[in-house]
Image: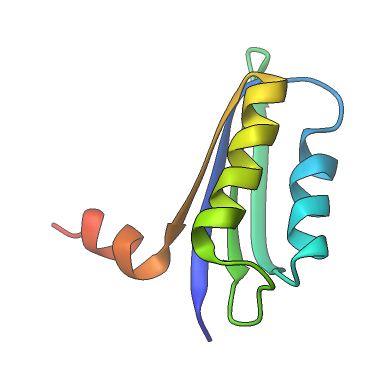
Length: 90
């Protein structure tokens, strides 16, 4: 199984989770784990997703998420777990 981590951060507003999940569902990306919080009006979400069978390439998915982020004033990042794990090792 090939996994990625998606992070979303920004001012809370209606529809953030729905828009991100729609892009994932349309591209056959399964959510394995999800955590979200709102602190002081700021929305934070971390998702672990299965990208094994995704329909588009990694860069195209990243661009689709960036477009949502730009439209909603959010920072949305997707990182392959291999990169994510390497960046966070001590």
